[in-house]
Length: 289
Image (tube, rainbow, N blue to C red; front, side, top):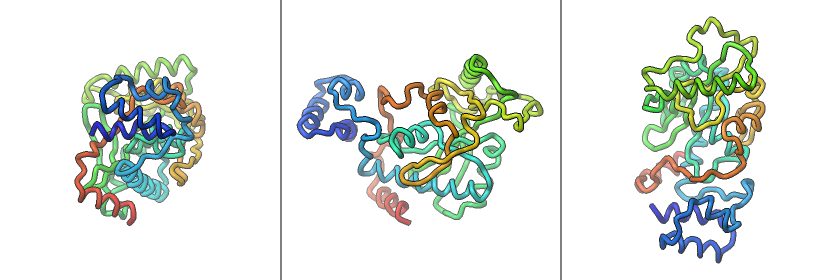
């Protein structure tokens, strides 16, 4: 597993000699710097648009999840349901034109009314028998997962909601604090930001918020002007078009602040070493079907 991560690090180094030197240093445990620090101090960090694609099994997982996203997109079109690329997937679309090279799942957002009915509707409309939707509840909260029934593949759907009115910048900061405070509670004790939904008038184009249904403390801001998200636009992701927020620059700045910079660490959800040979064969067949 260590060699795998070392290879991931080294694939960002464009020149052969520095790449081999860095690889040998990492394998020999001679340095204890984070990935980004190593690259920046070596002046070897590529521009985001020049970052390499993932390779091997990680790339296969990405392409398989892309296939699931395509199915979700088709089902949403049939149902007239709005969704948009969210968090790391939205970031990857802008910064890399597709997956962040070390990412291996897909995130999308959906408004509460569609979210609460989507599992049943997806399972009724979807024709791919390898896939199913369910509400996933854990310590972090509740989301929808569209999963492959036999392989570690999934699309995560996060819930958004209307607030009761338009808000100014200061109010958005206070709303974000409130949402984070609620999401820090046990899931069973979290309450909606707007308990009386009769106060919501969607026609007034109110502020859109992440709900406390999921722990979103990773992000800087969790409240957005209506015009930041709607009307939805489209963006290219791995050569395909998917729906996205109207103002991606503002959206990603609210989430990540300096979103074109690389993070201090890279995270892969799957333990690729646990995939069996048979799993990898199934993965490749799913991509091609």
